[in-house]
Length: 66
Image 1 (cartoon, rainbow, N blue to C red):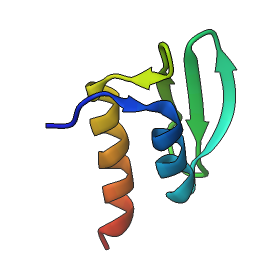
Image 2: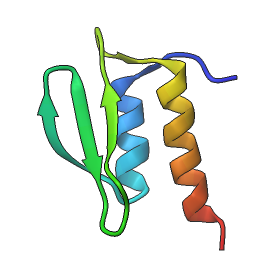
Image 3: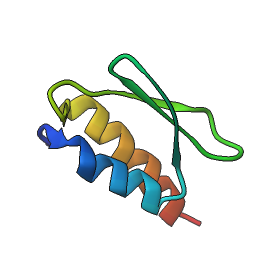
Image 4: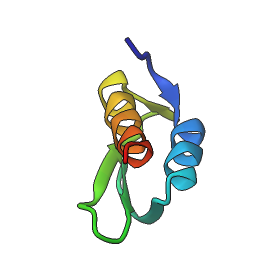
């Protein structure tokens, strides 16, 4: 099971999978990619909770599948 991660690591992972940071409103960082629904990641004290880490990992793993 994944633990909390630093936002900088999550951002690098998303950007390496083709996502880009579209906007920030409060603590929510919204990433977009053509043909996909946006992904909103809440960030508190520079950390992302484990639930959102798993969502990001799943989104990037979907890219690897044919």
